Amino acid sequence: MSLTLYNTLTRKKEEFTPLEGKEVRIYTCGPTVYSYAHIGNFRAYVFMDTLRRVLKANGYTLKHVMNITDVGHLESDADEGEDKMEKAAKKENKNPYEIAAFYTDIFFRDMGRLNIERPEIIAKATDHIADMLEFVKKLVENGYAYETSKGLYFDISKLDHYPVLSNRNLDEQIAGARVDVDEEKRNPYDFAVWIKAPENHIMKWESPWGLSYPGWHLECSTMSRKYLGDEFDIHTGGVDHIPTHHENEIAQSKGCTGHIPAKRWMHVEFLQVDGGKMSKSLGNTYTLDELQKRGIEPLAYKLFCYTAHYRTKLNFTFDSAISSQKALNRLREGYLFHSENEQEVNKETIEEYKRKFIEAVNDDLNMPLAMGIVWEVVRNEVKSKQFADLLLEFDKILGLDLKNAKSYLENQKKTELPKEILDLVEQRKKARENKDWAESDRIREELKEKGYVVKDTKEGMTIESI
Ligand code: AMP
Ligand code: ZN
Image (cartoon, rainbow, N blue to C red; front, side, top):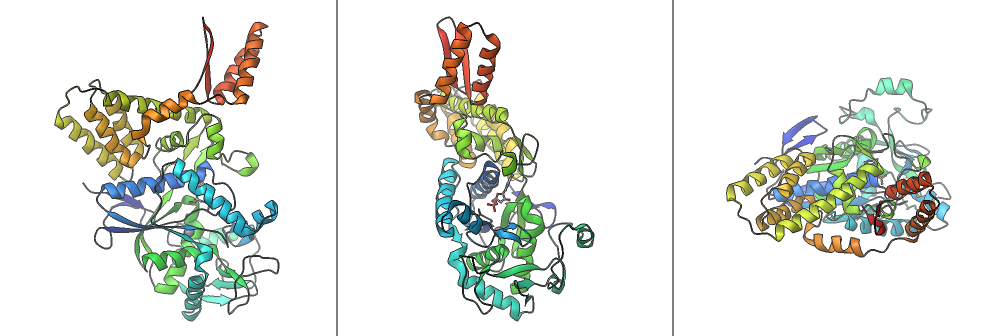
């Protein structure tokens, strides 16, 4: 069965075949490790995980690189503001290397909690400074980079096409731009490749242009080329990367090697919160820990991601995440129920489910459709270990750790209630004793928001995590 994947470069779904044999070479733009990754970031890595698993299910082996950006990512993607790492270091009174080590560890811990496969190669920007300098020198040699008082800039007018990924009309954009154009740049859209470090910048390296540090785009161009060659199969990232970061990566690679580095560019749409943007100022950039405190497991968040196709926006609300937690438990229970029964299922039924599931995931990773088939199997009236085995087969792609369903369910029962919840339960008891039904209902709602359901029975009040 053929695998089709959408390519932002051609704006089409295309049948996938690797450039060479059975190995797929992939590059994923990884995290900038200046803070905790939030659930929006993790939507991007859940997508990356699905892509990996689907490619493997199609018989391919992977050589997959993900970078860790620990220097050079400025506050705005377009060369403005401070380096995010240095800013965080000042705020936390640490050095940027400590900041990077701390948030990198937490990032991988969270990837583990989401059961996201780790790419074969993890490339940290600060480990590749010499390679980056070589890349810059080549750009200068080829006439694509020039020096200003701020650093080395890429001259986009030297390219036959810029931009190639997005439909941006640069003239229109320049006319409407808010920012002043840097007088030293040859063209307004020229971008920084290599940045001269201000005195107080901690991360900086010797170079023919003085103490300086790499631009974020250069990091990805250099590391993808180093590990995957001048041309590889797939490059992934979030939709926010399309207009600047990936456009500039392509420009640099063309300037250095003459090639657009990846044949396919895949982008995941944004996660929104309560129908709007997720942002620190709105206080809605939730982490996995914050979800967990409200009774939503990381794997329930992963299942939640499967409710929308990766190319459509996904709206996060606590209600819908709680529904995903319930659904995950139902999936686990359904799997266990099947595994304990031996009713007869004919082979064709199993094969038909398999075919439909693979057809869905092979159609540009259509996870909502694939989940529909998973639920058909869970709910099948015939209860059989064969269906349990089929669900385990599907889980190679879902990555929900279904084989450990029993222990997750048992742990949930065992988990003691947090003090905050116990206090609320106590307050609700008092409200009921005082016949303050409005207050009692209010606390019930608050508990629900925090992931707990209270029931009033003849024997008294019960409370369960959702
Ligand atoms: P950063 O660490 O800021 O470089 O971002 C890491 C990844 O998260 C990138 O692939 C971004 O495109 C992606 N990303 C950031 N915010 C969101 C969001 N709200 N929804 C989905 N992906 C996001
Ligand atoms: Zn990148």
